[in-house]
Image 1 (cartoon, helix red, strand yellow):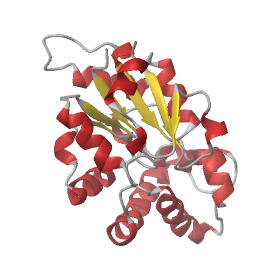
Image 2 (tube, helix red, strand yellow):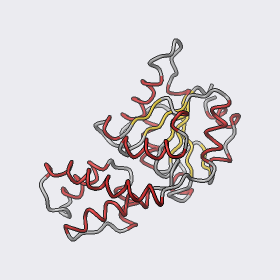
Image 3 (tube, rainbow, N blue to C red):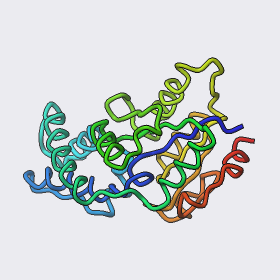
Length: 226
């Protein structure tokens, strides 16, 4: 039985992946490097900001010491904040899906590699913050997706004030990337992929693939949970 839905954030709730890329490149420009759209989507998208900068350093592309990573993350957030305030938007169908789940009393959480401040800013501006019992962000985990740590933490927090615990196989995770789908499966959860960032064939490991979250129904989500 369906007992909870866990959403990814960027690429599922808000159309912000390209804004993250632009913010990264604004910061990286001072070092004379730039991530292409292709490389970002194929290599870096699933990483937290910290892990993204660290990977660039390990690859020899970003020639700074790792102790500067937190400084770079703060600079990237400042750029992203400005972009999101003027160019960020909810993805079509998201509000309908969230309101449908809320009407049925289904608890909801977010598990994202984004910073908490980024997530909270968008949710508050969109009037959606009240729908989510739990928000797990980059600062709260040690390992990025596809590691299941974030998914399991979201479930743990959903269960904190419940007399009857929700099990992993009673959760559906909504993701837009293969990294997120892998993390959800590793956590023992069911998966829905939405084709906002990648084509359907790249998300075929999901239990269900949709082009818009408006396509989902409660009965379909219940079936995923058996």
